[in-house]
Image (cartoon, rainbow, N blue to C red; front, top):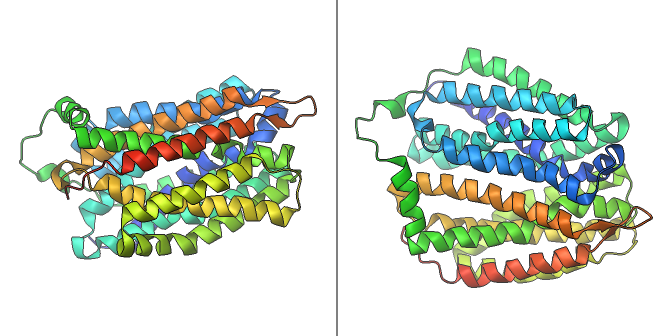
Length: 395
């Protein structure tokens, strides 16, 4: 199609905005707990609500989203996401914020899969890899630029400002998409009879190899998101970081992942995905323990510890994702990855909620029992190593 660069830029911005919207919640944990006078468990619900909603509606949308024009589906979901994000910025209390996060998750959870589907539809195979690379850099840019800027704005003007900024940007992008993107109906011209979507989903769970891959993915999510939502609050309340210093955690860690994740992919291609995943997971065990037991230290020491975790935990996701996508044949990969995405969101929600139920507050406002959360995350990481070794590559 014409103006492919404009299309890819718009899709990258869509990814960028919804990734920031999800990620910015976690480093603002201490502010939420203070302003709304809520417990760590209640804070974890803010993260979990988004993920539960994304999991449910992502699974529902996977059954019929291919029946609509891509532009219409993208605009519909992005408008819903924008409304939800703006609602967050105007939420007057904790329960209104929960409702707004539910709305945002319902639409935001569909966006990532839809963006990748558009790239697959529009960009020819011989140029699709580079196109995917352009769109997926949105995650790294969000980590390096978006989240630190959001934290900085929240520290200066309050927690509502980052959501307001993302909402305004999203509204502008919506208008641009409406006037610049063409109709994308190529997938609707396929005359092949559509199979029963419920049967497709059932076949995934009845296939032992694919079921193991879902278990592998779940264990990875638990091994990662048990501690992620509470890293920033712990660094502030226990280690002594200020709101501004927390921005360094994400800026440095995100920058390192931008440069080192391609290296992880090259190493996996050369030495084997399972081997690199296993060694990265073993290194992640030490990083998890270090973060969850970190005492009051100098800022540079804390950043070294958190950055190490970001690198090894993200590094293991590169070969892990390759392993997961290889357990299913090409013709069934779309439905499998859609189900896997919903399962991931559900695992994310449960892991965050469980962590919030374990962590308690001390009388001085610091967090207690973070080590227990870390030990559970380490256990799930070990489970992932063993389950990963049972996966069989079929394509």
